[in-house]
Length: 77
Image (tube, rainbow, N blue to C red; front, side):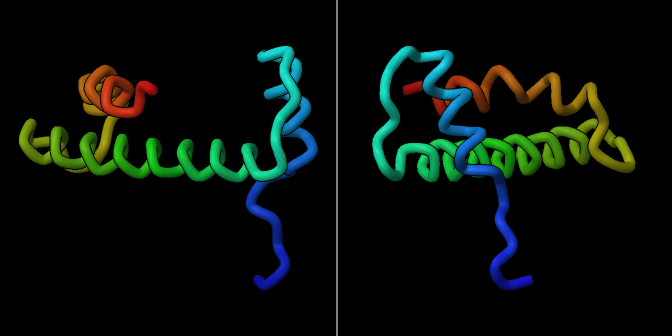
């Protein structure tokens, strides 16, 4: 649907400002959202590979837990 928002920008800005005690620049919330989405995509791809190698039929919580540490390490800034 055109015009449909993926996330509430104002809410994200308020949450980030509350946790960091800093002002958020104009497009910082967009960059954070895109980074989050890239992380989730990577996590799901790695979990799918892990599940397939483990002989599972689909992605399970166990396969996600196994790859979480590696995925987080890649996205650390």
